[in-house]
Amino acid sequence: MIVFLTGRVADTGTGYVDLDVQHVGYRVYTTDDTALGLELEQEIRLYTYQHVREDAVLLFGFLRRIERTVFEKLISVSGIGPKVALQMLGGLSPEALVAAIRLEDANTLCTLPGIGKKTAMRMILELKDKLDDLPVSSHEVITGVETVRPPESVADDVTTALIALGYRQKEAQRAVEAVLENRPAATVETTVKAALQWLYEHQSDASLV
Image 1: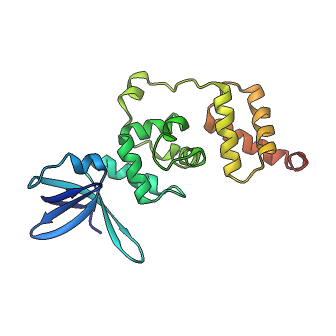
Image 2: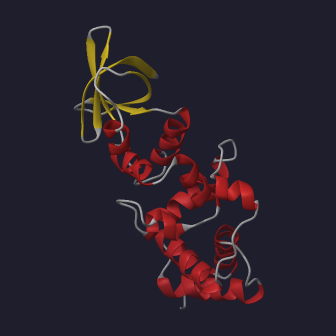
């Protein structure tokens, strides 16, 4: 496993850096901003992730360790591969990505290349509780609280998440309405959990919808 490389920038292109490490050339895939921000002959260190496929061994590189850490978290989500994760880091800083997931901000995540509503909700569900050891954006540090989201936004996001988990739209909507009736200020995460519990308790009723 190659975890970092230190060497001289031999060449750069859209989304990659060719690094000369003691006269051995490594092509490392990076965000466009990283590649374009480097100068030829510059000495750098890239923190790398080695991705092994049947037909190739690819290296993805990052100037900061937190970028690699967030990258590894992203590719653990079903449906997100290394190239999509790299594009996401090219669109938002790792700190901003962590903040968006913690705040259940699916709208911000959906602005990233290759990320639709279902994928954004899957990221939130799978990663929200796995980012406690990572720093957040300055905005979240300053406010220290989650932003209050309109109830209709929470309802839409939770309905989308339930459909992604295999429930029919009508039964998902029914569960969300039942849960939010008594908890209008709930977050997406708590509403998803409550809706799943409601569906479990009302399986026979939901099947008739």
